[in-house]
Amino acid sequence: MARTSNFSNKRQGKTNIYILVDGDCESDYLKALKRSEPYTSLLRHVDIKPDLLKYTSIESQYDELCTQLNHYSKVIWLVDYDVILKESNEQNKGKETTEQKFHKYRKKLEKLASQKKYEGKELHILINNPSLEYWYLLHYEATTKHYRTSNEAERHLKKHLKTYTKLDENYRRQIFGVLEPKLQDAIRNAKRIVIEDENEILARADIYKIFEDNCALLTKIIDKK
Image (spheres, rainbow, N blue to C red):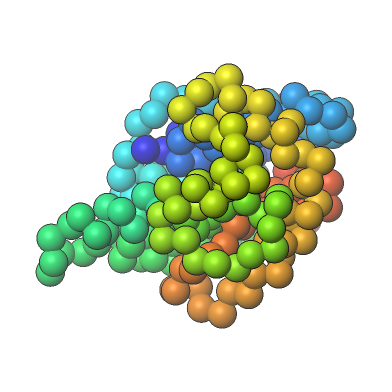
């Protein structure tokens, strides 16, 4: 299920950002980012206001993102690919799968965002495969192994972070602080992953793009000239 987070910058001339994420883990992780220095100062004019969990299908997420392109300078779709694959594997053969729908709607979003009326706006589609746990693992290892499920990645992560759990809300809120000393290692490891074919989703942690260059993706002002 997807959760929405509104990163809205209230100062005139600044960028406002809309992020749609896959669930509580991502939402809590991003909120913890803002509470941690130096990001507290860096993102002091950025608000995170999660809405209720309501965007349960690819179609509804696509509709929501299309709507928000009309209201925000930047729209970011943070995708947990493990969920897409799990749904696709459980669906009846012969019908359009969630994975096929994702690729279809991703292309439609990119085409929509390229229209002249959206000039000066940005769309970013960031994929984590299999899940956020793979990003966490990259804080400890420079691995390109393709974990097919979130559980596989989580088991490997626990070799380094034995206390890890995504079921405890307090722990989810603390995980950024635990991993932050190794954040630059994770960024370097994620950037080493070669994406040869956007239609073949293997190991990847695109979330690193939020953090590189001092969170430029969140703080850079769009030139609308």
